[in-house]
Image (cartoon, rainbow, N blue to C red; front, top):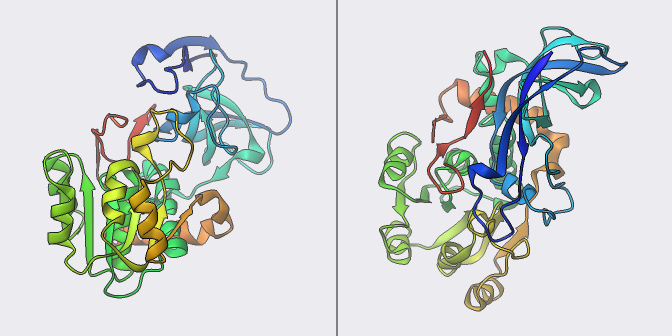
Length: 333
C-alpha cells in the first residue's frame, strides 16, 4: 500500500530556528503483510510538542530522548485505529496510542508498544488523548501534585500558560485550592482566553507589559508555586517574587530550546540566591517517572473534562508562540 510520510530532511543546528525545509513529505510503499506481534494502524491524530525541537539535533541533550535520524519519519505521540493485527492484545477497530508514533498515514507497529484507548472517556473526542487527557494533562497533574505541594489559598504563577500543558496546569492548580492563578503568555488574545475561558485570575502579556510590575499587582502576597514552562528572564523574574518555602515545578524551558545550553539551563546568580535564601525547591520534573499512576490520572482528567471543570481550547505556530492550547495534526477521520 502507498503511504505518505514526513521525514527529517535536515537539521536546523543547535542555535537555529526550525524551518519548513527541515522536513520533506514523501510517498513510500508499505507492506501490509504482518509478522507475529505486529499491527497495521491508520493514523488519526499526531501530537506536536516543544520537546521535539531537541530531537531535531544530532544530540537531543536528554538521555530519555533519541534524536530523529535524517531521512527517516519523525515520530511522537499519536492516536490511530487498528486496521489489521497479528497481536493478541489488540483487535481490528481498536483505538490505540503510543509515544513513538511515526508521522505516516499508515504504519506497522509492535502491538506490545500500543495502549488501547476507550473513546467513551472523551465522548469520542479522540484528539483529547494527546492533550488534556494525555501526556500534557498528565504532566500538569503530576507536576502540581508531586512537586507543587499546593495548599488552600496558595498563589500560583504559570509561564507558557496558553500552551498545552500550562493551560491545564493553571486549571488544576485552581481546582486543587489555589486562590490566585496568574498566567504569563505572549498576546492579548491568549490573556483573554486564559481569564475568560479557563478561569485564571489574571494574565500577563510579557511582550507588552512589565512582568515584574504586573506580578506585584496580581500577586501582592508573593508567589507560592511557579509552574515553569519557559525558563530564561521570565523565570528569573517570577522566582525573585517567590515566598519562603515555595516550589518551582520545572516542567519545560521552551525559551531555551533553540539555544545550545544544558538542561535545565542555569538560573541567573540573583535567582539562584533567592532559591537558596528562601528555601525554594526547584527539582527537575519528568512525567515518565510517574507512569505507574497514569491510568488513574487519565480517568480523573477525563472526568474533569467531561464535567467542564477542565476546559480544552486549541488553535494555532508553536515554536514561535502562536498556539493556544494543544497543537495537534489531524491525519484522517
